Length: 307
Image 1 (cartoon, rainbow, N blue to C red):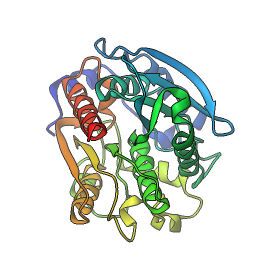
Image 2: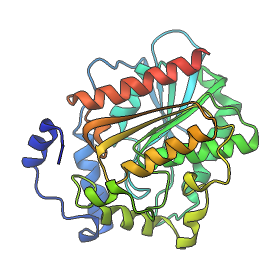
Image 3: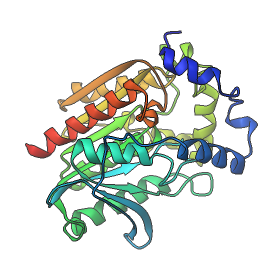
Image 4: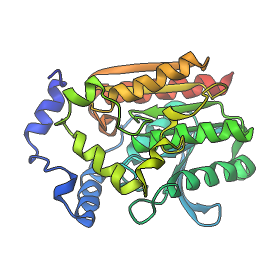
């Protein structure tokens, strides 16, 4: 298995991951939170200001302002966690990196989680937040004419779903960023799903369990807001950055989505990061591959905002 040696060493010091089915929900959420908030942000990603604020009739967000004078371009960011775990703290290091390297005002969204709030609660929260920003971005020092969406893992799926909805509603986006989000219900027989069925980090059964919590009915997997890959058309979507991890069961689904976008005429930057595993961007403070993907995503955003 071609896992980066630094990751191999890190995993060797950690207790064996039992899989999400072996844990009750409260323990799973607390375990993910405890391990995530210990991860530092990269020292060279300074932020001018951070503020927690409710928007759009009660949606909790954390807003990050980059250095420099506004109005700044605005990116709505969704954290990962299988639609079940995660919050404004668990991927704070990713949000800071994208804010700094993308030179964008970044709004991190605390969307509703399953199983308490099944699909389509999360994509509806994202859509409500995006529409609020389209109207109120200037109040934050942002530029409503330069909007983007971004996310990691499940948050990447939500970002891509929002890009579909924005296109259909005539809401212009400059970019969409998806870090290792599959964009598809795991029903395809993909080589990466077989090769990395037992991890590391994310197991195929973990993926299945998260989707079981998220969907009320498996038939909802065909809804493009759950599986953007299954949309009838991908033409006219915002330019996309899709970063995948080599050692990730969801890798091939995400890369198939990138190719689907290309075939539809969408501008796509897609890159596979050698030796990386699912969730690797959270290690931006010390893992070179994590720095690389977030710097690449930040550069992509910055370039799209200046066109």
